[in-house]
Length: 476
Image 1 (cartoon, rainbow, N blue to C red):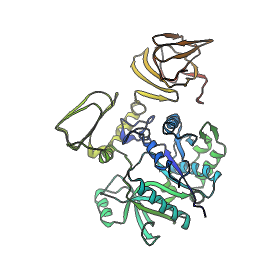
Image 2: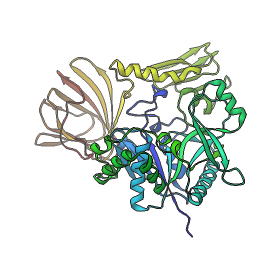
Image 3: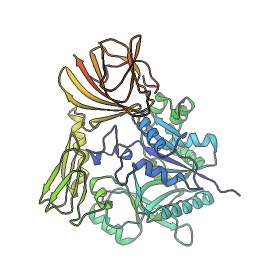
């Protein structure tokens, strides 16, 4: 009998607020190269890309990240995959339901491996062995399986899973006795000493049919909402867009609360695979290479008499003197300084930025678009200067502005410019003027990136002053 293949479901909806200011809502940690030259979502894909036990992954993402994810997948030779776009985040329970319904249409007897896109797993062999054990448990005993990380310290930042009765004689898989919330330090020490508790990895392997059956029993409103959303979904290139109104009627709940904690057939596979959820700066310090002073340093950093620190600069020269157990992170528009033992509090800073109406938690100075990117270099009440980078072959929408005029100066590459009914070609050191109210479009017909300096002037310079008439990427 042929072994049932596994379809990985890669969740990419998080914003990584505890890694601010590097991680931001429009460019979160899973899209960043935090632990290697590849981004975390690329690392996750490579984990399941070449193994014979896996089908092509299905991705769950949000609207803002869709083109960045598609481009990062293309960069590692991974195209023609399904990316389901959540109309709005509803936690992992509904996200997994969307994926299960999509997979079930093709193979109702399939298994799905639900994986966050922003975790580190250093031991690939241990990962695959654990998946194999979970596969056998799921198919032989019709179980909902999860992966428990064998704890190395009394961690208070993770939830825990208490193991129950053994399912196999080797103790490779156990029924779940209990899911427990993040403990205090005293309780975490007792968990570690008992040897009965594992860190909750948030990684699951389910028979698709069983997951949908459990939802029908425990969360019928969630399943009904997701079914309606997928039945009325639209396909847009590689993207699948569930119908918004139906999906938003779904309750918000996690896989743990919606399914696992209510099931009597949940199992845990203990594993030591070099796992880290990289959920905070101290977690990143734990796994990163350190210098002779036990510092993790990257970027333009000059450190003197500093120990046990994480010091990172993505912008200016950053100097530290006499620091111990600190995190110092500088980007082009923000600086974070905090005690390495209190990095969970970074989320409170993000909440304060949001409450005060600021935007440093939303985007970097470089903002990515499906055609390339732009970076604001100077701004005032009535003018703004940006650097546009248009990738080869890409084209901006045909658009107009009610409140601003624009000057474009080509500094590298060739630009095909449309202004009302006139189409012209501009080379390096040539420029054009787009009056207020003129329809215009920018296209890079060349084979190298096109660099444009854009000077905007007018009474209102917000990004929402765009009226689109045509758009290659389906934006409204």
